[in-house]
Figure (spheres, rainbow, N blue to C red):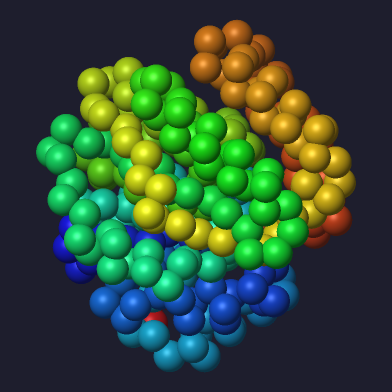
Length: 249
């Protein structure tokens, strides 16, 4: 895969403590598009980083809206969706550059692991994604998934009503549209934010399984689709007023 035909899209919301570490792991030839809803100076840190291939969009919508806005502004064939609270494994972009993407592929799910706590959970989580992709029910993490831009546009992108589980839901629609979605475990990111697991591993697991089952079988009522069921309740600040301002660095 040609890394110059790739846009890395990352929504940020008060990631000042993570963003420097995140950016250091990205090769200079990869274009980065940040959709920011921060009030802690995250965007200032990005500007001081000195990279030339960064665009910052300002948007106060939910996570699905942020990912969709980034996808609409990108022009490359492949879109790499991720989060600022992860770090890419050292070999990630070499592995990606060596990947021969089949024209039938609409999406690629990568592994999400941990370098500190909850390592076993993340290994099981990534194994589950691998098995589900093999079964034609492609689960994915928004922290590490690639989407072919034409496939995303063909299914009208992310469901902007969703404030979580927007990642797998998109991949299911891409698969149903006729594209293949594959899992590649060599594409690894490591998670550093474990707040939801620290808050209760069983609670987090049941939350994801219940929502994903209802979404997959299209059984979720509209009111519940818009509600996150407490997913974002762990000490996260309010979203700033919704604006859209593009800054080119």
